[in-house]
Image (cartoon, rainbow, N blue to C red; front, side):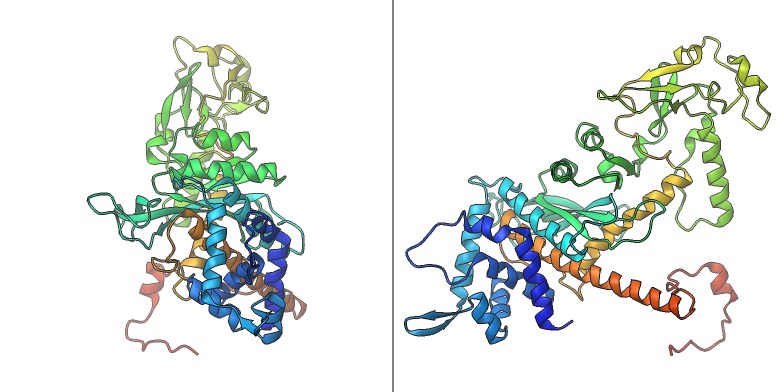
Length: 507
């Protein structure tokens, strides 16, 4: 794509967002008009970041003054003064960015984004999603969420507590060493990434929302208002995928507000949340479901399938999960406005044989049989159905039975969120490590990160369109589909290889 068409596409995204006019209306009016408008500043930020430059104001100024002369005059980079043509100076770039930063920040910064800053970041990224989708939204209502560390350029505070970046705080991040983490000084960056529907076609994995907050704020609590704003904007949210970092919270912090927003959670349970966690009317609470009191205890020890498991191990694991599902109390109705629903005994539902349900004993012996029913049957065994309030399994309830094959296949889509961060953390790309942006505070860093995700969305959309075009070309010529590169080699592959063979030379 030519530089001119790329500039036109970036300008279209900025104009569709409506952000320049919103910020300009908040800026003070001086005696002499500013040469650099907010619109041109945002375009310069996108140009600099699309060229994989760091988020420095000097780089933004260079990107603007290096444009063709016609574009510089059109965008106001070259202005006609009384003394003649005047080229934009760095001080003017710094001045406009500083004014925008001031009106988008809170009067008393606390490490969380202001309401107007959230509106600006949402509008910019949403404009990129719709512009790259041909004016329509994505063909999917499923999203993956994740957070990553974002280190501040400032040095950590001294013993007296002084620091150049007062809004940053100490946080923890994982390392490549299993079971070991390290501290960093900065912020938590979160992203909401579009993923394909279950069994649906592939879609471009665009980032639709981001949020940046100090490490002293709990990340799951900060993503809740982001999802709620999406719902208020009319964006449908079906599946919401998250790792155990989101699941391992009080239900009032994350799980319950997300269900209230209409999301169906597909989450990985923390090891401390797995297995039996009490009872309700005699039914056992485990992994987000209700189970018969006579469920074999060995089935509650099921955990997620180990990475790299073979075909036989996978089949055995899935068979045990299917057997556990026979003992589950099935919901008979959808939750009402207060979150209450009815659940039916598995024997009454015809999933197993139980002496307490004489009608179930007529089922075939392929169904599990309860050998030792409870001597004093609880309520769930006396009644055919029970009422389940919203407080039961409020933390662990999700769309699919955990850890079934259906849950595993659905949860595998969550890696799209990790790919979103790899797009901007890649050293060959923008590489948002410490020093990438040398500005302090939530607002300037959030503005820069919003622009870098807009640019990343452009790259992802272009790469997806190129893959789709290549697939259509291969189908038209009767060629087989593209093969993905094999990244894993089993022990069988290594043993089958000739140890004395010379190393393979790439063609």
